[in-house]
Amino acid sequence: MTPCEGIEPRTTVDLEQLNACLDQSSAEEVVDWAARTFGDGLVLSTSFGIQSAAMLHLVTSVVPRIPVVWVDTGYLPPETYRFADELSRRLDLNLHVAQADLSPARMEALYGRPWELESYDKMRKVEPMQRALEELNATAWLAGLRADQTQHRSGLPVLGRQGERFKVLPILRWHSRDVHRYLKAHDLPYHPLFEQGYASVGDSHSSRPVQAGDAHERDTRFGGLKEECGLHLDAEEAASLESSQL
Image (cartoon, rainbow, N blue to C red; front, side):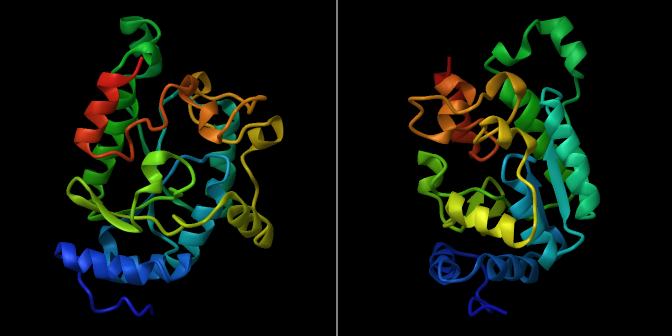
């Protein structure tokens, strides 16, 4: 039990008080607080990315049967699908796969190379995620975002709101070295593409290994044109992103 118990996130002042407390809590304590506060309304999202095993293990160690939402765009590397299968079995994940209504084949037949469309992220990522959250009656969403990943994330609080739901970020203050230590301590694997020089991985067409001259791991995503795909932005921010990319 954390010292944050007893404060309900109802007002701006409550959020400020809770964040002051949660900032001083361990990642496990933040997850425990969220589980106590939101109960069955709490879900976890994962990308099965390079370091995802750490967040999946950490959260399910505290809340074993928490619903885990994975957005499968249909364009992930084969290694990601095998990694997801391996971790799902090892950690006994309560996995919920979110997918767009249109299959990749049908979308390509209708639109050509769909990832070149400005609406791609909304159609294949954002809308499936929102539908999954609604189907699970989610009131709060745990995510493995870290402040050192993007400029947008550097300004996020541990506890905030995204749309009508609360967003809880237990490892927000962690760095890559903290994730590495956690993975090693619990004998957990990196994504297989880590060994091929990937620091971040999403869709096959929007990810590449780190190259000389890259200033940040996010330079390896989306052709360096953007840092966020929209999943972790509110509606206004996502609309702004879509209108400014490419």
